[in-house]
Image: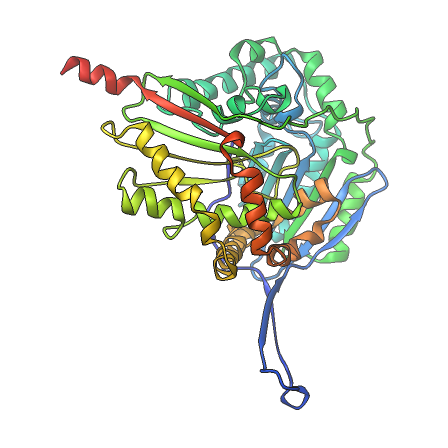
Amino acid sequence: MKLKVGMSLLPLLFLFIFGCQNQNEKKNTDSKEVAQFKVPVEYYTLDNGLKVILSQDKTSPTAIVALYYNIGFRIEPKDRTGFAHLFEHMMFQGSKNLGKMEFIKLVQENGGVLNGSTRFDFTNYFEIVPSHKLETMLWAEADRMRGLDITQENLTNQQGVVKNEVKVNVLNQPYGGFPWLDMPQYANSNWYNAHNFYGDLEDLDAANLEDVSSFFKTYYAPNNAALSIVGDFEMDETKAWIQKYFEDIPASDLPAKPDISEPKQTEEKTFIKNDALANKPAIALAYHMPQRNSPEYFAMGLLDQILVQGDNSLLAQKLEKEKGFTSNVSGGINYLGNMFNYQGPMLWMYDLTYDNDTSKEEILTAIDEVMNGLKDSIDQPTIDRAIVKIRSQLYDDIGGTFGLGRADLLCAFALFDDNPERINTLEDSFKEITPEIVKKTIDEYLTKTNRTVLTVNPLLAENDKTKS
């Protein structure tokens, strides 16, 4: 389960537009340089419902094919926890014209890289290839959208692979699942948001061929997907290839989405997780997010920057620099992506490990000092600095990994908003947020009644004390 795109590998792929007022047109105002970035976006939909986003950039002779299906682990079948992730693995087991693992071989032998991941609200697959292999990748993605090789042998094999992944990444790992897997289960109430999306071992064993076939026919259809192409390609030629390979894939009858709303939290929740492999205590704090795309949502994005992002963030200054309780406060909105590529209820969260001679009460007291004085620190200069940090992060995300971050946002905005052009208005949305909106958001959302606190009890450390 790949979690997040990493650091930038190429110069940022933006078109910068600089303008200055003409001195002859200037009337009692100073000339100002205006800078903004603009990602080229062409968006359309095939007759079968497939959403297509094209974003051309000839900086490098590479192309990205990103295919996002509007099905994540949030709405996977009950009693089949981990099924969406299991199915992600099944997508590499063969299709009509490509045998088992031949999809991977095809990409790698043509000089490309590929991966897939399962998130809250989508499952995605991507290939980064030399641009002259773009048609090959479109054919291959269409081939497996058209039909998988669903056999008991492939299913049994991948059940074993995923179960082993759970054991390695969660069950047999210190701080395994903390807090990205654990916290949603503690903080949320609705099963769709609160179940073990990596998968209980019994549920993974219970999956059968009928489950796999039904899931594929229902959700892996063009009218439940978005396809983005980013990089060096010819527009008309690429449109013709997409039409050729995808247009005759039939749409499916999509079921009604279940109710994924989360009831309002009215009192603080606290939990302790015993960890036999951990040697230091850890703590994570989570708050339910405002509704996506609301003014308060963008205000929380600013507060995330102010509180936890970077060495100058308030919690880093208090817990790392002033108190010396920890060396790393990390956090954000949506630990399995970013604040833009999800659709349902979400948590803002941060976590840290700390020394055994520091108490949880000391940590919480220091945190409360920051939170109690937070509104007093909110003014326009503080917001402006947060916007600079957000802008920098957007540049890193959108330009990183040959433009993969760009493909991610384009698909997410197509699936969830039917508007991939949103990628070009994100900064403006943050600039519309005033100090008054930020303070209102603090009062409504950054309260103890909206907070869940999860601590890790390090049994390994206790055992070491007993031995000594």
